[in-house]
Image (tube, rainbow, N blue to C red; front, top):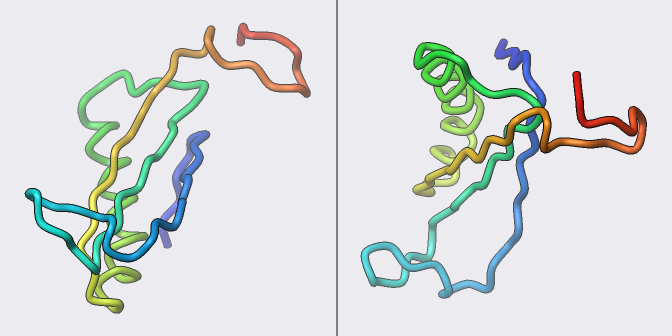
Length: 92
């Protein structure tokens, strides 16, 4: 079982078939994911690698079963640029 001790969001927006391009060519079985890692930042490279390995462990079986190729991008923000309606604060 994969446990990601972190705050992150994965956004999935379905595109119209034929609008995904890889290397300038249309790709019918392609997924591009954007992962927003918010409120925390990876402090060491090992943490980044571990997080990405956990993401791979989650998504690889799903997309391999569907014979899809995929990529992802992880965007981070610092804690002082994150605010939620519950805390009303931008500091830890």
